[in-house]
Amino acid sequence: MTSMSRFSAGLLAGGIGALIMILMGFAGQFWIILSLFVGLLLSLVVGLAAGFFVSKNPTFASRTAGSGALAGLIAGAFLLIGQIIGGIIAANQPDAQAALQGLQTTSAGSSLTPSQLSAVGIFTFAFFGCIFGLLSMGTSTGLGAAGGAIGGRNNRSAVNYPYGYGMPPIPGSAPFPPQPGAPPYPQQYPPPQQPQSPYGSLAQGQYANPPQPDVPPYPPQQQ
Image 1 (cartoon, rainbow, N blue to C red):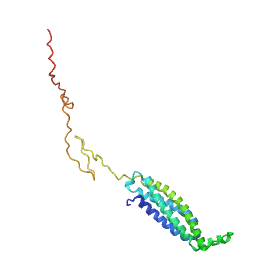
Image 2: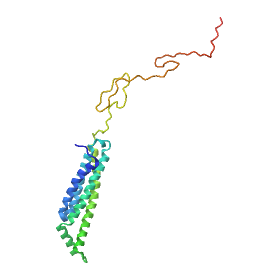
Image 3: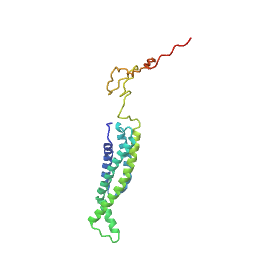
Image 4: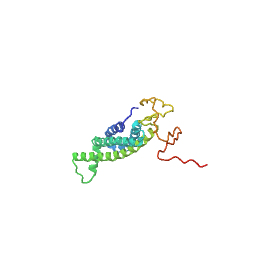
């Protein structure tokens, strides 16, 4: 699967869900019930899908849960937009308009014009779409985090440091095996130079006592 960013994963999963919610607007007066239950079901599927899509990106290998939550949030935002648009479409369906007319005739003292009644219906359906969309967005965010954590359990980081990368080989040890993508190392390195000391080299075990020019010689022992 091609690596996807958080926005593209949320756009793919949420765009499909938003299209379904828009098409559900043609259900008319039954849209409110369908929007609640189908919206929650879609938020589960869309959140898991968005989190799974973004978990395959090696850039987010160490934070798949957080990246999946953000992708699920983006997908839920598209669901929210789809539910609001679906509610506006549902409010303009003939059966929804007829139901609103019936509510007006049964209400005492109500005298709304058809345009005002249509505006009230659009506002009511859009309000329910916003409430259900916010609920779906929260659900898809949580499921996005779960999908990212599940899908990215075995992922490796995109920054792959080969063994010995950036480290010169130790003199006297076996050279590091060649790694793909790593720069070639020089074959030989000069041995480290130890500072010279008047007392000799500690590495070679030489402890020379330099002469002391200002110290007189010891007197001979008396027989």
